[in-house]
Amino acid sequence: MTKKITDFSKLAVHTMTTKPWDLRQCVENFSAAGICGITIWRNVLEGQNLREARVMLNDYDMQVVSIARGGFFPSVQKEKRQTAVDDNLWAIEQSAAMGAPVLVLVSGADPAQSLEKSREQIQESILQILPQAQKAGVKLAIEPLHPMYAGDRSAINTLEQANNMVEEINSEFVGVAVDVYHLWWDPNLQREIIRCGRNGKLFAFHVCDWNVPSKDFLNDRGLMGDGCINIPQIRGWVEETGFSGYNEVEIFSDKYWAMDQNMYLEKIKNAYLKFT
Image 1 (cartoon, rainbow, N blue to C red):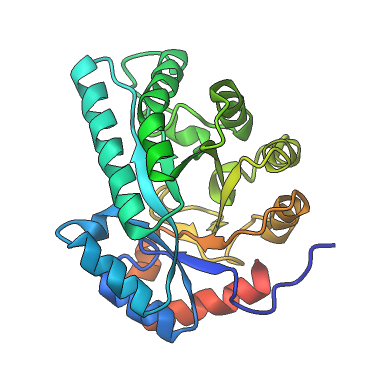
Image 2 (image 1 turned 90 degrees about the vertical axis):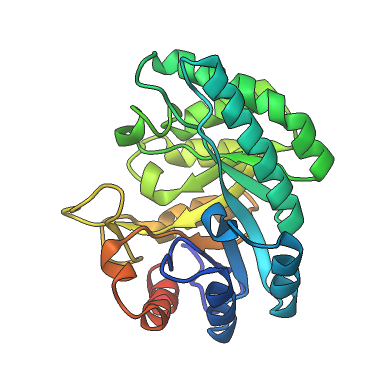
C-alpha cells in the first residue's frame, strides 16, 4: 500500500501551473504557501537577469527542481536542427545559472518524416549537447509524451522508448522524466518505471490528472483527483525504486488559470494531500 502524503516537503509546483504569475510572483506566493520546490519554465526567465533571479530564489529558500523545457530537436532541415541544439545549449546555461540539477527535454517530432527518423535525430542531438551538460553539472531528462502528440511534439511516446534511448546513450547525465498525464494508460508502465528507477535514471516525477471528458488535450489537465489517473499507485511504483525526489505538479488548464491563483494554490495543496 502506498504511503500517504502528510506534508509538503516533497511538493514542487511548475511555474506553468500558475501561468498568470511571473517568476517573482511564483516564488513569493509558493513560499508564502509553504511550498519550497519549484520547476521553472523558460518563458518566465525571458528578460530576467539570471544572477538576480538566482539571488531571489535563494532569499526565499526555494529549491529549483528542474528547468523546463529543452528539446524539440527533429527537423527535415539541418539548419533547424542546429538552431534547436543551440537553444538547448542555452537552456543548459540557464539551468546551471538557476542551480537546477535537471533540464527536462520534450524531444519534438517533425511530421514531414518518420517517427524513427525523428528519434534518430533526437538521440544525435542529445549526444551533441551532452558534453556541455556534463560540464555544467546539469542532467538531461527525456520526457515521453502521450501518443496524441507524436505528430509534432514528441516522437518518444512510451517510457520504454525513452528507457531504450537512455540505455543506448549510456551516460549518468541522461535519464527520464515520468509524467502521469502522458503515461498512465501504458500497460507496461510499472515495469518501465522499475527499469529506469533501479538504474538511477528516473530524474523527475510529474503529477496532474486526466479529465473525462477532456475538453482540450493540451490545456485541460485536471487537478489531482479531478480525473481518472490512479496517481497514488503510480507514485508507489516510483517510490519503490528508491526515488526520493519531488512530486512536481504540472497542470496546463485554462480553467484553473482563469481563477484567483492564490485560491488555486490552496486547491493544489489540498489535492496533493488527498489524491497524490
